[in-house]
Length: 241
Image (cartoon, rainbow, N blue to C red; front, top):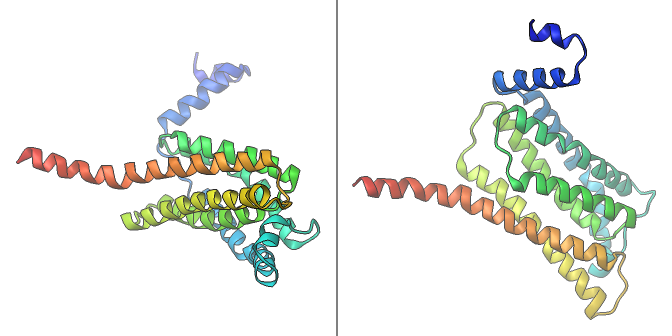
């Protein structure tokens, strides 16, 4: 009896086996349309980012760093609306994992740890309406707009030069280091200066741990992919000589 005939009986296991066999036997999934869509969404985020930038820098320029970091956006402002979309986008971005599997690319720890940690922190920060969150959102919008544009280009079959890939990873690493810096500044404001700030200590510690581990993991990824790989061919050449 053929697998298709058995499948018609509605056996969930056979449905699962059929799906797995189809994925394993097919060529790499062409995700240009999805990646292009994702790149377009993040490009739209970047265009609308002016509201978040405007809100943050108006507070920074007209008042001071303390108010810019420690006072959140008004719940009815445009920036608050885009903050909500940011939270929703974290769920959409979980689809990255599916498309990596469909493209038969290896999943690394950094990938799923990043998605899981960001989703957890976004929910926690949204519940507390933390003020430094708008700084994190601005950084994330920018970095992800660049990142998904890069993904769209590579999915189309083009192979960007190595220095472009290094720049994309450098932007991501810079985002994580900036996150560590922001959490340090907020900690100093709350503890050393003994001033109020719209972020709980629990959320602050969570942000620091996440950004610090992200920074270390992205640094490890950067070194392994752009320096150690480059040194291996040279070592092999010397051995042949």
